[in-house]
Image 1 (tube, helix red, strand yellow):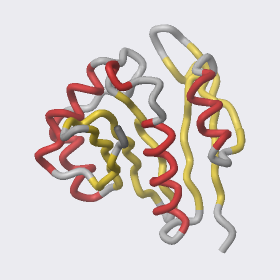
Image 2: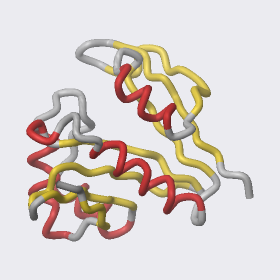
Image 3: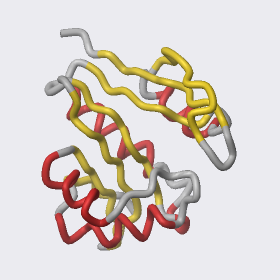
Length: 146
């Protein structure tokens, strides 16, 4: 079955929260924060068989997007959904912003490989950025030639 990628709607926020709560390493936000981001930012969701199976959210800052979360529900892992979500985000960004930025745990090798596959390049490090456990953040950027 194929995944359909679309912009999130306000009624998707409960499902987004449910997916986010499955991941201990995700950025955890409130319903209000996600609702605000859906209304003013960039939130794409993946649907399969009318079930929300993943999402990517980014915040617009000074002509760039900063990816905040890329998550897939546990039962939909390893089906290429994160790849599709990121592909769609990058495609939309090319005509709207000069770059996409993000931070990722140094140990999150699957995510790092995914970002690199889509053209992101390591541009820096934030020492002990993450807590529980303490870990460095690797900074990535995808810059668009305009």
